[in-house]
Every structure is written in structure tokens, then in C-alpha cells.
Image: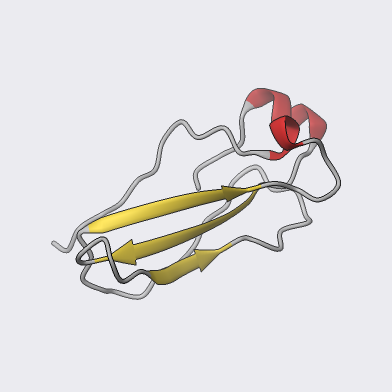
Length: 84
């Protein structure tokens, strides 16, 4: 995840999410897990080992200490780089 929305930066809300990859949209493998995030960060970055994938799925998760509409990440952009 690249960075937080302005209102979340000001509130210091920790985003919670999971990112999975798949070749066929049936079998999914986790590639990044922020489901237990409790610490606020301006940028959530992950180093992911090389893998073949055709699909990427982002699942946003509520923060247990906040109302649902406050706790969901506001996604503007996800960058996925292919092999060179």
C-alpha cells in the first residue's frame, strides 16, 4: 500500500488489509498481511518474493477500535511491477 489518505494521516489511523495473488482467480496465495496492524504508518510497503501471478486481490479489514467507515483504507493506487 502506498500511503494513507489525508484524513487518516491526521487521525493516525493504522490500515488493516491483506493482499493475495492468483493465477486463476480460484486459488489465492497471501503475499502481504497487514491484518494485525495497530501502528500507524504513512506508507505501508512490502517486499514480496518473485512469483507468477495474473490477479492481485486487496481485502481491506476494519480496525477493531474504530467505527467501520473510519477504519477502512481509502485506496487511491496499487502499484504492481512485472519482471523485466
